[in-house]
Amino acid sequence: MASQLAGDVARRRTFAIISHPDAGKTTLTEKLLLFGGAIQLAGEVKAKRNRVQSRSDWMKIERERGISVVTSVMTFEYGGNVFNLLDTPGHEDFSDDTYRTLTAVDAAVMVIDAAKGIEPRTLKLFEVCRLRDIPIVTFVNKMDRESRDPFEILDEIEQKLALDTAPVTWPIGRAKTFAGTWNMAAGTVRREDSQIDPVPVNGPESDGVSGLLPENERETFIEEATLAQEACRPFDRQAFLEGHLTPVYFGSALKNYGVRDLIEALGDFAPSPRAQESDKRLIEATEPALTAFVFKIQANMDPNHRDRIAFVRVCSGSLNRGMKAKLVRTGKSMTLSAPQFFFAHQRQLADNAVAGDVVGIPNHGTLRIGDTLTEGEDLLFRGVPNFAPEILRRVRLGDAMKAKKLREALQQMAEEGVVQLFIPEDGSPAIVGVVGALQLDVLKERLKQEYGLPVDFEAARFNVCRWISHEERGQLEAFMQKHRQAIARDLDGDPVFLAENAFSLNYEADRAPGMTFDEIKDYQ
Ligand code: GDP
Image: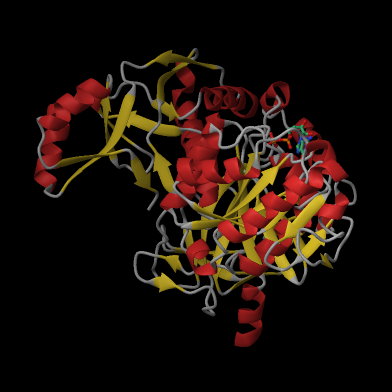
């Protein structure tokens, strides 16, 4: 049994794709699923998204604005490995959702547009990965178009991200003459992804490599490729796993080049599920007892039933349908009667899931983001973070009779991670906080559709919010007493200090030695 579990865990690769909008994340996702046999026709990811969206009214916002709010997981198999690809919203207004999803992966693929190089959002998401030491595989996309010189792209990654690069493949030609990828370490060429097995070749001068190019390009290519092989850093798996080095692959997701190289790289080099830090001890992925944490809650597609799916990352043991698990936050036991797997276009009851897998657990509000499930052990996973919101608004309700209902609805939205909720200590109306304005649109739409509560938002006096603490409880209480009108409590009852701007925050902080003002709060 134990060795069966170890074998199953070793085959798992759980990853996300990070990129700037338009670099080709959706196209690459489709191709990964296509080559993994999870979908028949490329294009279904988008088509499917539209179909799902049309089922739910609040998702109109996504459809109208052409953005994807929903994070989901897609599973496919390739070369004996099981890949769990966690999708993230493309729009930066939903970036806290993306950050939470990145807590649930063991590796990330960074997609770069070959003509544009490192763009702002790539940089930001890369920084989040670095904070968590997530190893990164780089895919330089759109080589079928006019692009930058590959050396220049490698240089930019090294400079802008302070990350060593090791090109594993090298593009044979560019733009119109792009003809395939040469794997420098393996000494093979793959012309297109329809070619499953790469062909052994004898180096850049050979017919199988430079011979694929028009005559006038061969000489330059041979020089460049020889230089790449001799001068670039070789791939070092340890440095990759520690997050110091990224292997680089070139290709074109649209034209089916380099995608198989990438999947094979993930299979060969990317880590199987990592050990996870908890407040008590490090949990190994192959331990027999179940541990898991919730990193995402999604309202069910059916607004009439108001049930939710909690996305759970299994960290150890196995999650079996019908088993009982302890929700450590409340100490209560819950039966996992209908855990679900998500595929590209369907859900399916999950009979058994192991470390690295992501399972959806339907519930009516029992589970919150950051919750830990175990088979009884009292431990909490840390690290599903809360980011201080950048926009704060008071919620104004036309009908005062519905204040209680509003409070409940806001509480639920906050538990789902749609917005953050802060209840002021002085009894004034609730404040919601978001990192991007579109989240407010989603909140407004959902309050109207699902709860019949038409609301408006008005500017709060505050624009900055920080979690406060002090080693001495008395000092914290004194500070809160003194600034009562600027103190609120979050969903967990933890106090925050609200300030008009960064200047006034610093002013108060300078006058309160020993107080900590945190921009990031871990959920537990
Ligand atoms: P996302 O915003 O990162 O998900 O990007 P998409 O996958 O939606 O791609 C953005 C645009 O770039 C679309 O028009 C794609 O067809 C196009 N695209 C994606 N990959 C490639 C590629 O390899 N080559 C070319 N020429 N176009 C691509």
